[in-house]
Length: 502
Image (cartoon, rainbow, N blue to C red; front, top):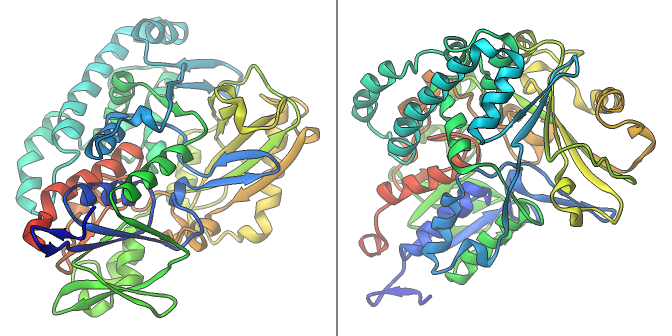
Protein backbone atom coordinates (compact mmCIF):
# COMPACT_ATOMS: atom_id res chain seq x y z
CA UNK A 1 0.00 0.00 0.00
CA UNK A 2 1.43 3.46 -0.86
CA UNK A 3 2.47 5.76 1.99
CA UNK A 4 0.18 8.57 0.79
CA UNK A 5 -3.54 9.23 0.89
CA UNK A 6 -4.72 11.69 -1.78
CA UNK A 7 -1.18 12.98 -2.09
CA UNK A 8 -0.60 13.32 1.66
CA UNK A 9 1.48 11.06 3.89
CA UNK A 10 -0.63 8.38 5.52
CA UNK A 11 -1.08 8.96 9.27
CA UNK A 12 0.92 6.59 11.45
CA UNK A 13 -0.74 4.31 14.02
CA UNK A 14 1.32 2.48 16.62
CA UNK A 15 -0.24 -0.60 18.23
CA UNK A 16 1.33 -1.72 21.51
CA UNK A 17 1.06 -5.50 21.81
CA UNK A 18 0.14 -8.21 19.33
CA UNK A 19 -2.57 -10.15 21.10
CA UNK A 20 -5.76 -10.80 19.16
CA UNK A 21 -7.10 -7.36 20.07
CA UNK A 22 -3.96 -5.61 18.86
CA UNK A 23 -3.72 -7.59 15.64
CA UNK A 24 -7.40 -7.00 14.86
CA UNK A 25 -6.96 -3.28 15.56
CA UNK A 26 -3.96 -3.13 13.24
CA UNK A 27 -5.91 -4.79 10.41
CA UNK A 28 -8.88 -2.47 10.83
CA UNK A 29 -6.67 0.62 10.93
CA UNK A 30 -4.71 -0.57 7.91
CA UNK A 31 -7.96 -1.08 6.01
CA UNK A 32 -8.89 2.54 6.83
CA UNK A 33 -5.69 3.91 5.37
CA UNK A 34 -3.33 4.10 8.33
CA UNK A 35 0.32 3.15 8.17
CA UNK A 36 0.53 0.69 11.06
CA UNK A 37 3.42 -0.44 13.24
CA UNK A 38 2.75 -3.21 15.77
CA UNK A 39 5.26 -3.39 18.64
CA UNK A 40 5.60 -6.68 20.53
CA UNK A 41 8.02 -7.13 23.43
CA UNK A 42 8.15 -10.94 23.06
CA UNK A 43 10.00 -12.78 20.30
CA UNK A 44 6.77 -13.76 18.53
CA UNK A 45 3.31 -12.36 17.91
CA UNK A 46 0.22 -13.45 19.80
CA UNK A 47 0.58 -12.25 23.38
CA UNK A 48 -1.49 -14.67 25.44
CA UNK A 49 -2.09 -16.53 22.18
CA UNK A 50 1.58 -17.21 21.51
CA UNK A 51 2.82 -20.73 20.77
CA UNK A 52 5.29 -22.98 22.58
CA UNK A 53 7.13 -25.59 20.54
CA UNK A 54 9.34 -28.18 22.21
CA UNK A 55 10.36 -31.80 21.72
CA UNK A 56 8.21 -32.14 18.61
CA UNK A 57 5.05 -30.85 20.31
CA UNK A 58 3.10 -27.66 19.58
CA UNK A 59 1.24 -26.00 22.45
CA UNK A 60 -1.11 -23.03 22.18
CA UNK A 61 -0.15 -20.94 25.20
CA UNK A 62 -3.59 -19.48 25.83
CA UNK A 63 -6.91 -19.27 23.96
CA UNK A 64 -8.14 -22.61 22.61
CA UNK A 65 -11.87 -22.00 22.13
CA UNK A 66 -12.92 -20.19 18.94
CA UNK A 67 -16.46 -18.80 18.92
CA UNK A 68 -18.15 -16.11 16.78
CA UNK A 69 -15.88 -16.87 13.78
CA UNK A 70 -17.56 -14.12 11.75
CA UNK A 71 -15.38 -11.65 13.68
CA UNK A 72 -12.33 -13.26 12.08
CA UNK A 73 -14.08 -13.46 8.71
CA UNK A 74 -14.63 -9.69 8.82
CA UNK A 75 -10.89 -9.08 9.14
CA UNK A 76 -10.05 -11.23 6.14
CA UNK A 77 -12.82 -9.60 4.12
CA UNK A 78 -11.35 -6.15 4.86
CA UNK A 79 -8.20 -7.39 3.13
CA UNK A 80 -10.00 -8.86 0.15
CA UNK A 81 -9.44 -12.43 1.30
CA UNK A 82 -11.32 -15.30 2.88
CA UNK A 83 -10.52 -16.76 6.29
CA UNK A 84 -10.51 -20.21 4.69
CA UNK A 85 -7.60 -19.08 2.48
CA UNK A 86 -5.32 -19.21 5.52
CA UNK A 87 -7.07 -21.01 8.38
CA UNK A 88 -9.01 -24.27 8.54
CA UNK A 89 -11.65 -23.91 11.27
CA UNK A 90 -13.42 -27.11 12.27
CA UNK A 91 -16.33 -27.62 14.62
CA UNK A 92 -15.76 -29.41 17.92
CA UNK A 93 -18.48 -31.60 19.43
CA UNK A 94 -19.20 -31.83 22.24
CA UNK A 95 -18.09 -28.32 23.07
CA UNK A 96 -17.01 -29.53 26.51
CA UNK A 97 -17.29 -32.69 28.55
CA UNK A 98 -18.02 -31.64 32.11
CA UNK A 99 -16.90 -34.27 34.62
CA UNK A 100 -18.10 -34.01 38.19
CA UNK A 101 -15.97 -35.12 41.10
CA UNK A 102 -18.06 -38.29 41.51
CA UNK A 103 -17.38 -39.28 37.88
CA UNK A 104 -20.74 -38.22 36.43
CA UNK A 105 -20.40 -36.65 32.98
CA UNK A 106 -22.37 -33.98 31.10
CA UNK A 107 -21.60 -33.53 27.39
CA UNK A 108 -22.24 -29.86 26.63
CA UNK A 109 -23.00 -29.20 22.94
CA UNK A 110 -24.87 -26.92 20.55
CA UNK A 111 -27.46 -29.56 19.65
CA UNK A 112 -30.72 -28.52 21.34
CA UNK A 113 -32.14 -32.05 21.40
CA UNK A 114 -28.92 -33.55 22.75
CA UNK A 115 -28.76 -30.85 25.43
CA UNK A 116 -32.34 -31.54 26.52
CA UNK A 117 -31.43 -35.21 26.83
CA UNK A 118 -28.33 -34.38 28.90
CA UNK A 119 -30.38 -32.16 31.21
CA UNK A 120 -33.04 -34.87 31.56
CA UNK A 121 -30.38 -37.40 32.63
CA UNK A 122 -29.64 -35.24 35.65
CA UNK A 123 -33.07 -33.76 36.38
CA UNK A 124 -36.10 -34.37 34.12
CA UNK A 125 -38.00 -31.69 36.02
CA UNK A 126 -35.49 -29.06 34.89
CA UNK A 127 -35.82 -29.53 31.11
CA UNK A 128 -38.47 -26.83 30.79
CA UNK A 129 -36.40 -24.50 32.99
CA UNK A 130 -33.36 -25.13 30.81
CA UNK A 131 -35.37 -24.12 27.74
CA UNK A 132 -36.44 -20.89 29.47
CA UNK A 133 -32.83 -20.20 30.42
CA UNK A 134 -31.74 -20.54 26.79
CA UNK A 135 -34.52 -18.15 25.77
CA UNK A 136 -33.22 -15.69 28.36
CA UNK A 137 -29.67 -16.20 27.11
CA UNK A 138 -30.80 -15.40 23.57
CA UNK A 139 -32.60 -12.25 24.70
CA UNK A 140 -29.47 -11.09 26.53
CA UNK A 141 -27.35 -11.96 23.48
CA UNK A 142 -29.55 -9.82 21.20
CA UNK A 143 -28.87 -6.78 23.36
CA UNK A 144 -25.53 -7.41 25.06
CA UNK A 145 -23.65 -8.79 22.04
CA UNK A 146 -25.46 -7.79 18.86
CA UNK A 147 -26.42 -4.25 19.92
CA UNK A 148 -23.77 -3.27 22.47
CA UNK A 149 -20.69 -5.46 21.87
CA UNK A 150 -19.13 -2.97 19.44
CA UNK A 151 -20.56 0.27 20.87
CA UNK A 152 -18.31 2.94 22.34
CA UNK A 153 -19.16 3.55 26.01
CA UNK A 154 -17.17 6.77 26.16
CA UNK A 155 -20.15 8.72 27.50
CA UNK A 156 -22.25 8.06 30.59
CA UNK A 157 -25.28 8.86 28.42
CA UNK A 158 -24.65 5.66 26.45
CA UNK A 159 -24.67 3.76 29.73
CA UNK A 160 -27.85 5.50 30.85
CA UNK A 161 -29.64 4.46 27.67
CA UNK A 162 -29.06 0.77 28.37
CA UNK A 163 -30.25 0.83 32.00
CA UNK A 164 -33.85 -0.12 31.09
CA UNK A 165 -32.56 -3.11 29.09
CA UNK A 166 -30.25 -4.09 31.95
CA UNK A 167 -33.19 -4.08 34.37
CA UNK A 168 -35.48 -5.93 31.98
CA UNK A 169 -32.83 -8.60 31.36
CA UNK A 170 -31.96 -8.77 35.06
CA UNK A 171 -28.35 -7.74 34.47
CA UNK A 172 -28.10 -6.89 38.16
CA UNK A 173 -28.16 -10.60 39.00
CA UNK A 174 -25.16 -12.89 38.81
CA UNK A 175 -24.92 -15.56 36.13
CA UNK A 176 -25.34 -18.22 38.80
CA UNK A 177 -28.35 -16.36 40.24
CA UNK A 178 -29.98 -16.13 36.83
CA UNK A 179 -29.41 -19.82 36.10
CA UNK A 180 -30.76 -20.75 39.53
CA UNK A 181 -34.01 -18.94 38.77
CA UNK A 182 -34.64 -21.46 35.98
CA UNK A 183 -33.20 -24.80 37.17
CA UNK A 184 -33.16 -26.41 40.61
CA UNK A 185 -30.61 -29.21 40.26
CA UNK A 186 -27.31 -28.02 41.74
CA UNK A 187 -25.17 -29.85 39.18
CA UNK A 188 -27.12 -28.30 36.30
CA UNK A 189 -26.71 -24.90 37.91
CA UNK A 190 -22.98 -25.50 37.84
CA UNK A 191 -22.93 -26.68 34.21
CA UNK A 192 -24.99 -23.73 33.01
CA UNK A 193 -23.13 -21.06 35.01
CA UNK A 194 -19.43 -21.82 34.49
CA UNK A 195 -19.01 -19.70 31.33
CA UNK A 196 -17.80 -16.51 33.10
CA UNK A 197 -14.70 -18.45 34.14
CA UNK A 198 -13.73 -18.52 30.46
CA UNK A 199 -13.37 -14.72 30.61
CA UNK A 200 -11.95 -14.39 34.11
CA UNK A 201 -15.20 -13.94 36.03
CA UNK A 202 -16.75 -15.52 39.09
CA UNK A 203 -20.16 -16.99 38.15
CA UNK A 204 -21.43 -15.88 41.57
CA UNK A 205 -20.44 -12.24 40.94
CA UNK A 206 -20.29 -11.70 37.15
CA UNK A 207 -23.30 -9.86 35.76
CA UNK A 208 -25.93 -12.10 34.18
CA UNK A 209 -25.22 -10.20 30.93
CA UNK A 210 -22.46 -12.78 30.50
CA UNK A 211 -25.10 -15.51 30.32
CA UNK A 212 -25.24 -14.54 26.64
CA UNK A 213 -22.26 -16.86 26.08
CA UNK A 214 -24.55 -19.90 26.23
CA UNK A 215 -26.56 -18.72 23.23
CA UNK A 216 -23.50 -17.36 21.43
CA UNK A 217 -21.99 -20.85 21.50
CA UNK A 218 -25.22 -22.44 20.30
CA UNK A 219 -25.48 -19.95 17.43
CA UNK A 220 -21.92 -20.27 16.08
CA UNK A 221 -20.62 -23.40 17.76
CA UNK A 222 -17.16 -23.99 19.18
CA UNK A 223 -14.39 -24.36 16.62
CA UNK A 224 -10.76 -25.34 16.50
CA UNK A 225 -8.11 -23.96 14.16
CA UNK A 226 -6.22 -26.83 12.55
CA UNK A 227 -2.58 -26.45 13.49
CA UNK A 228 -3.56 -24.60 16.67
CA UNK A 229 -4.86 -21.16 17.57
CA UNK A 230 -1.43 -19.86 16.55
CA UNK A 231 -2.53 -20.36 12.93
CA UNK A 232 -5.02 -17.53 13.43
CA UNK A 233 -2.20 -15.34 14.72
CA UNK A 234 -0.02 -16.22 11.73
CA UNK A 235 -2.89 -15.43 9.36
CA UNK A 236 -3.56 -12.05 10.96
CA UNK A 237 0.13 -11.09 10.86
CA UNK A 238 0.07 -11.98 7.17
CA UNK A 239 -2.90 -9.67 6.62
CA UNK A 240 -1.10 -6.78 8.35
CA UNK A 241 2.01 -7.25 6.24
CA UNK A 242 -0.11 -7.54 3.12
CA UNK A 243 -1.52 -4.09 3.93
CA UNK A 244 2.01 -2.71 4.18
CA UNK A 245 2.03 -2.72 7.99
CA UNK A 246 4.99 -3.67 10.16
CA UNK A 247 5.35 -6.05 13.10
CA UNK A 248 8.40 -5.56 15.29
CA UNK A 249 9.08 -8.28 17.85
CA UNK A 250 11.51 -7.74 20.71
CA UNK A 251 10.35 -4.11 20.87
CA UNK A 252 9.26 -3.30 24.43
CA UNK A 253 7.42 -0.03 24.97
CA UNK A 254 8.67 1.78 28.07
CA UNK A 255 6.28 4.74 27.87
CA UNK A 256 3.68 6.51 25.79
CA UNK A 257 4.84 10.02 24.96
CA UNK A 258 2.38 12.82 25.67
CA UNK A 259 2.49 16.46 24.61
CA UNK A 260 -0.25 18.94 25.39
CA UNK A 261 -2.62 16.22 26.52
CA UNK A 262 -2.20 14.21 23.31
CA UNK A 263 -0.41 10.92 22.74
CA UNK A 264 2.38 11.55 20.26
CA UNK A 265 4.13 8.18 20.07
CA UNK A 266 6.12 5.82 22.25
CA UNK A 267 9.55 5.42 23.73
CA UNK A 268 11.03 1.92 23.67
CA UNK A 269 13.03 0.30 26.45
CA UNK A 270 16.00 0.49 24.07
CA UNK A 271 15.76 4.29 24.15
CA UNK A 272 14.37 4.59 20.62
CA UNK A 273 11.46 7.00 20.13
CA UNK A 274 8.72 6.54 17.54
CA UNK A 275 6.26 9.25 16.55
CA UNK A 276 2.63 8.45 15.78
CA UNK A 277 -0.63 10.19 15.02
CA UNK A 278 -2.52 7.71 17.19
CA UNK A 279 -1.47 5.07 19.72
CA UNK A 280 -3.49 1.93 20.40
CA UNK A 281 -2.63 -0.10 23.48
CA UNK A 282 -3.36 -3.79 23.50
CA UNK A 283 -1.39 -4.09 26.72
CA UNK A 284 -3.24 -4.76 29.99
CA UNK A 285 -5.30 -1.62 30.60
CA UNK A 286 -4.16 -1.33 34.22
CA UNK A 287 -0.54 -1.76 33.13
CA UNK A 288 -1.01 0.83 30.37
CA UNK A 289 -2.23 3.47 32.78
CA UNK A 290 -0.07 2.54 35.74
CA UNK A 291 3.26 2.17 33.94
CA UNK A 292 3.09 3.55 30.39
CA UNK A 293 1.43 6.90 31.08
CA UNK A 294 2.85 9.41 33.58
CA UNK A 295 0.70 10.08 36.66
CA UNK A 296 0.47 13.74 35.61
CA UNK A 297 -1.46 12.66 32.49
CA UNK A 298 -4.07 10.70 34.44
CA UNK A 299 -7.16 11.99 36.23
CA UNK A 300 -9.54 9.02 36.34
CA UNK A 301 -7.20 6.05 36.33
CA UNK A 302 -5.00 7.21 39.16
CA UNK A 303 -2.56 4.88 40.93
CA UNK A 304 -5.01 4.64 43.82
CA UNK A 305 -7.95 3.66 41.61
CA UNK A 306 -5.89 1.12 39.72
CA UNK A 307 -4.71 -0.45 42.98
CA UNK A 308 -8.24 -0.56 44.42
CA UNK A 309 -9.93 -2.07 41.34
CA UNK A 310 -10.97 -5.72 41.27
CA UNK A 311 -8.97 -8.05 39.04
CA UNK A 312 -9.74 -11.43 37.53
CA UNK A 313 -8.33 -14.67 38.79
CA UNK A 314 -5.07 -15.91 37.38
CA UNK A 315 -4.17 -19.30 35.97
CA UNK A 316 -1.75 -22.11 36.58
CA UNK A 317 -1.16 -23.82 33.24
CA UNK A 318 0.80 -27.04 32.74
CA UNK A 319 1.68 -28.00 29.16
CA UNK A 320 2.72 -31.61 28.69
CA UNK A 321 3.09 -34.31 26.07
CA UNK A 322 2.69 -38.05 26.49
CA UNK A 323 4.30 -40.95 24.69
CA UNK A 324 0.90 -42.61 24.33
CA UNK A 325 -2.53 -41.45 23.20
CA UNK A 326 -5.59 -41.21 25.43
CA UNK A 327 -8.21 -41.83 22.76
CA UNK A 328 -11.24 -41.59 25.09
CA UNK A 329 -10.46 -38.03 26.19
CA UNK A 330 -12.26 -35.37 24.10
CA UNK A 331 -10.84 -32.06 22.89
CA UNK A 332 -12.18 -30.01 25.84
CA UNK A 333 -12.83 -31.43 29.32
CA UNK A 334 -13.81 -29.57 32.48
CA UNK A 335 -13.01 -31.52 35.62
CA UNK A 336 -14.93 -30.11 38.55
CA UNK A 337 -13.56 -30.54 42.04
CA UNK A 338 -15.47 -31.38 45.22
CA UNK A 339 -16.35 -27.70 45.83
CA UNK A 340 -17.75 -25.06 43.47
CA UNK A 341 -18.94 -21.95 45.31
CA UNK A 342 -16.40 -22.42 48.11
CA UNK A 343 -13.47 -22.83 45.72
CA UNK A 344 -14.45 -19.70 43.81
CA UNK A 345 -14.68 -17.82 47.11
CA UNK A 346 -11.12 -18.92 47.89
CA UNK A 347 -9.93 -17.74 44.47
CA UNK A 348 -11.77 -14.44 44.07
CA UNK A 349 -12.46 -13.22 47.60
CA UNK A 350 -10.16 -14.88 50.12
CA UNK A 351 -7.34 -15.07 47.54
CA UNK A 352 -5.83 -18.24 48.91
CA UNK A 353 -4.39 -21.17 46.97
CA UNK A 354 -6.72 -24.01 47.94
CA UNK A 355 -5.74 -27.66 48.31
CA UNK A 356 -8.45 -28.70 45.84
CA UNK A 357 -9.09 -27.40 42.34
CA UNK A 358 -11.23 -27.54 39.24
CA UNK A 359 -9.45 -28.01 35.92
CA UNK A 360 -9.81 -27.42 32.20
CA UNK A 361 -8.01 -30.11 30.19
CA UNK A 362 -7.19 -29.31 26.57
CA UNK A 363 -6.31 -32.23 24.29
CA UNK A 364 -5.94 -30.68 20.82
CA UNK A 365 -4.58 -33.91 19.38
CA UNK A 366 -8.11 -35.30 19.71
CA UNK A 367 -8.84 -33.15 16.65
CA UNK A 368 -5.37 -32.60 15.18
CA UNK A 369 -2.72 -35.31 15.73
CA UNK A 370 -0.15 -33.19 13.86
CA UNK A 371 0.52 -31.21 17.06
CA UNK A 372 2.42 -34.14 18.56
CA UNK A 373 4.81 -36.82 17.25
CA UNK A 374 3.10 -39.96 15.90
CA UNK A 375 1.45 -42.00 18.65
CA UNK A 376 1.76 -39.15 21.17
CA UNK A 377 -0.71 -36.69 22.71
CA UNK A 378 -0.37 -32.97 23.47
CA UNK A 379 -2.21 -31.48 26.44
CA UNK A 380 -2.48 -28.50 28.62
CA UNK A 381 -4.30 -28.42 31.91
CA UNK A 382 -5.40 -25.14 33.40
CA UNK A 383 -6.31 -24.46 37.01
CA UNK A 384 -7.95 -21.15 38.02
CA UNK A 385 -5.98 -19.70 40.95
CA UNK A 386 -5.85 -16.34 42.75
CA UNK A 387 -3.86 -13.51 41.21
CA UNK A 388 -0.64 -12.38 42.86
CA UNK A 389 -2.61 -10.59 45.55
CA UNK A 390 -2.61 -14.00 47.25
CA UNK A 391 1.06 -13.63 48.11
CA UNK A 392 1.79 -17.15 46.81
CA UNK A 393 5.47 -17.72 46.02
CA UNK A 394 5.07 -19.57 42.75
CA UNK A 395 8.79 -20.18 42.41
CA UNK A 396 8.51 -22.63 45.29
CA UNK A 397 4.84 -23.66 44.94
CA UNK A 398 4.64 -24.46 41.22
CA UNK A 399 6.23 -27.91 41.08
CA UNK A 400 4.31 -29.28 44.04
CA UNK A 401 1.06 -27.95 42.59
CA UNK A 402 1.88 -29.56 39.23
CA UNK A 403 2.54 -32.90 40.88
CA UNK A 404 -0.77 -32.76 42.73
CA UNK A 405 -2.60 -32.09 39.46
CA UNK A 406 -0.69 -34.91 37.72
CA UNK A 407 -1.72 -37.37 40.44
CA UNK A 408 -5.35 -36.24 40.14
CA UNK A 409 -5.33 -36.70 36.36
CA UNK A 410 -3.76 -40.13 36.77
CA UNK A 411 -6.59 -41.16 39.10
CA UNK A 412 -9.33 -39.81 36.86
CA UNK A 413 -8.90 -39.34 33.09
CA UNK A 414 -5.29 -40.17 32.25
CA UNK A 415 -4.27 -43.47 33.86
CA UNK A 416 -0.53 -43.91 34.30
CA UNK A 417 0.09 -40.31 33.30
CA UNK A 418 3.12 -39.75 35.52
CA UNK A 419 5.03 -42.48 33.68
CA UNK A 420 3.99 -41.31 30.20
CA UNK A 421 5.18 -37.68 30.23
CA UNK A 422 7.91 -36.87 27.70
CA UNK A 423 7.81 -33.05 27.71
CA UNK A 424 6.60 -30.48 30.20
CA UNK A 425 6.50 -26.77 30.98
CA UNK A 426 4.48 -24.50 33.28
CA UNK A 427 3.04 -20.99 33.37
CA UNK A 428 2.11 -19.41 36.69
CA UNK A 429 0.55 -16.10 37.78
CA UNK A 430 4.10 -14.80 38.15
CA UNK A 431 4.62 -15.47 34.43
CA UNK A 432 1.42 -13.60 33.59
CA UNK A 433 2.91 -10.58 35.31
CA UNK A 434 6.55 -10.92 34.26
CA UNK A 435 6.12 -12.29 30.72
CA UNK A 436 2.80 -10.79 29.68
CA UNK A 437 2.82 -7.65 31.86
CA UNK A 438 -0.58 -8.42 33.35
CA UNK A 439 -1.23 -6.30 36.42
CA UNK A 440 -1.02 -8.52 39.54
CA UNK A 441 -0.70 -11.49 37.23
CA UNK A 442 -4.46 -11.40 36.56
CA UNK A 443 -4.97 -13.53 33.46
CA UNK A 444 -7.99 -11.57 32.14
CA UNK A 445 -7.47 -8.02 33.43
CA UNK A 446 -10.26 -6.33 35.35
CA UNK A 447 -12.82 -8.69 36.86
CA UNK A 448 -16.05 -8.66 34.78
CA UNK A 449 -18.51 -7.42 37.41
CA UNK A 450 -21.29 -4.94 36.69
CA UNK A 451 -19.45 -2.02 38.31
CA UNK A 452 -16.45 -2.67 36.03
CA UNK A 453 -18.33 -3.17 32.78
CA UNK A 454 -19.26 -0.92 29.84
CA UNK A 455 -18.85 2.76 30.85
CA UNK A 456 -17.24 1.75 34.16
CA UNK A 457 -14.42 -0.04 32.34
CA UNK A 458 -11.39 1.79 30.88
CA UNK A 459 -12.78 3.33 27.69
CA UNK A 460 -11.78 2.30 24.18
CA UNK A 461 -11.06 5.97 23.52
CA UNK A 462 -8.86 6.91 26.45
CA UNK A 463 -10.49 9.33 28.84
CA UNK A 464 -7.02 10.46 29.93
CA UNK A 465 -5.24 11.70 26.78
CA UNK A 466 -6.30 12.36 23.22
CA UNK A 467 -5.24 10.05 20.39
CA UNK A 468 -4.80 7.09 22.76
CA UNK A 469 -7.09 4.10 22.32
CA UNK A 470 -7.40 0.78 24.15
CA UNK A 471 -8.27 -2.70 22.88
CA UNK A 472 -8.14 -6.13 24.47
CA UNK A 473 -9.48 -7.80 27.60
CA UNK A 474 -9.08 -4.79 29.88
CA UNK A 475 -11.45 -2.48 28.00
CA UNK A 476 -15.00 -2.78 26.65
CA UNK A 477 -16.49 -5.31 26.07
CA UNK A 478 -14.01 -7.59 27.89
CA UNK A 479 -12.05 -10.83 27.69
CA UNK A 480 -12.47 -13.86 25.44
CA UNK A 481 -11.92 -13.97 21.69
CA UNK A 482 -15.30 -12.38 20.80
CA UNK A 483 -14.67 -9.67 23.39
CA UNK A 484 -11.18 -8.64 22.32
CA UNK A 485 -12.06 -8.80 18.61
CA UNK A 486 -15.12 -6.65 19.30
CA UNK A 487 -12.97 -4.12 21.15
CA UNK A 488 -11.12 -3.59 17.86
CA UNK A 489 -14.46 -3.13 16.07
CA UNK A 490 -15.21 -0.24 18.44
CA UNK A 491 -12.21 1.61 16.96
CA UNK A 492 -14.10 2.01 13.69
CA UNK A 493 -16.44 4.45 15.46
CA UNK A 494 -13.92 6.33 17.64
CA UNK A 495 -10.72 6.60 15.56
CA UNK A 496 -10.91 9.25 12.83
CA UNK A 497 -10.67 8.12 9.24
CA UNK A 498 -7.13 8.25 7.88
CA UNK A 499 -8.07 10.96 5.38
CA UNK A 500 -9.27 13.18 8.24
CA UNK A 501 -6.19 12.44 10.35
CA UNK A 502 -3.66 12.93 7.51
